[in-house]
Structures are given as structure tokens and as C-alpha cells.
Amino acid sequence: MSNEPDTPQLSQLISWAKEAGRILRDMQDGELNTRHKSKADLVTAADMASEAYLLGEIGKAFPTHTINAEESGEHQGDSDHRWYIDPLDGTLNYAHGLRIYSVSIAYAFKGELKLGVIYDPSLDECFSAEAGKGAWLNGKPIRPSTIDQMIDAMLITGFRFQFFNTPRSNLPYFNRVMLEAQCVRRLGSAALDLAYVANGRVEGFWEIALNPWDVAAGILICREAGVRVEPLWGEGDLLSGTPDIIAANQAIFPQLDAILRAERFAQGL
Image 1 (tube, one colour):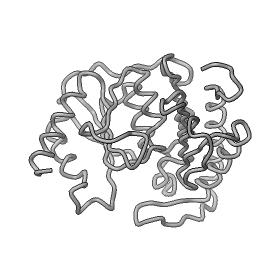
Image 2 (cartoon, one colour):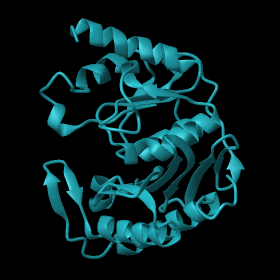
Image 3 (cartoon, one colour):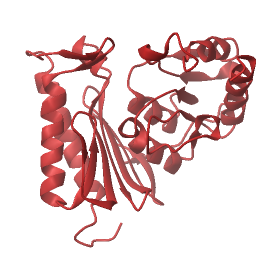
Image 4 (tube, one colour):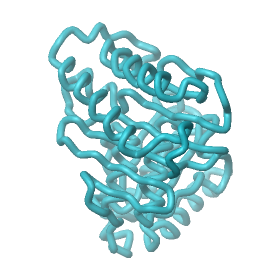
């Protein structure tokens, strides 16, 4: 990234993500004022406090930029400069006291992801990436795993409650992949799921019906680490709508993709 006034720096995103993480960490054992957006979708006072902080910092530094935020939606500005922020990815975990959650911030210029940060306040782990320069965990370069057989692969996925009894349900795909992989986990934070693929802790990840703010930072971190990331089925745009996503190391990707496509065909979809 250049040092032009309208161009953010990775160090800014890291600083903001860590401070938002501190807010979440400090609020976790207090009164969260939890409310339901839907049966399995919560929002807490911590979500709102973290988002307010991030909106304030980005707005002060780059007042003309567009921001896509989970809780408050799109803050319109110059569409060439677009931010994707998830102030608390893993709210269900957070509200239950399960310390698997993260802050996710990404910046894109003219539709191309340029900067991405995912911060885990519980472990003080900061995953970051800059387009064309690599990906890091707490400043050290990261790479995906070299496992190349599904039987040895640990994968991650997630589920959307509203799709359980519809053709968009992930349950049939989960069942199919479980028969082929060593194991499949559900951690509850898509941002961390992608970060863990980038860092080689797991070999792959897929999920149906996410949001751009869930995945934007993780996409860049994965790609800069050497992970293949694509829209599931090769359809749609990962930075708009409710994207379906698949990410895996280079050897596992085609195997996982083939299994998911075979199940889709079996369902007649």
C-alpha cells in the first residue's frame, strides 16, 4: 500500500482490531443486554460497542469511504474505497462464555481486497495480510498445511438455522464430507475458520450463506498465505450478497470441491 492520505495502512487495522478486541474482552463477563435478531442470531451490547468504536476510527481517518458493517449496515461513501467490518464474529459463542470469537476488518479498493485483519482477543492472536505481501500471525509468516489426503484432513464448516429444512441446508454436505475426511468441526466464527486454514491448523473450510463482512479479511489472509479460496460451486461473488464459500490448501481443495459437488448432484440441485 502507498502512503497516500486516502490509503489505509495495515498497522492501523491491527491497532483498531486489537482495541475492539479489548472492548469485547472487558465486556464479556458483564451485562451483555443480549437480544435476538432471529432464533440463532444474537446481538449483544459488546457487538454494538465494538462496532461503534470501529466506525468511529475509520470515519475519522477516512470520512469519505464506504463501510459495510454487520450491525448497522452500509454507510455510503466513495464506493472505490470499501470496508468490511465484523465487530464480533462468533456472537453466540461470546454470549455463552465460549471464548472462540474474533474481530474482522478488511479494506478493498475498486473491488480488490487490499488489507485484512482477524484478531482473537482470547488468545491474543492477530492474523493479518496485505495484498501481494503475504500473511502473518503476530508478525510471523503463515502457510497452509501440506496434508494432501482427505482421510488425514481436519475441516471446518458452519450452519445457518434458517436453511435446515430447505435445499440450502448444509446438513447433507456435512454428512457426506464426514464420511470422507478425518473429521469436521464447527467452531462458530467463520473469520477464525478461514484464519485457521491459512495457518495450517485445519486443511479446509466451507459454508453456505455467509456475509461479506464474515469472510472478507479471511479471504485475503488465506490467499496471501497460499490457500485457494473460491465461491462454492463457482457461483456468485464472495464480497456481495450472502456468499457460499470454499477454502482449502491446494491439494485438498479439489477433493473437497468434488465431494460437495457430488452431493449437490445427488440432491438434484
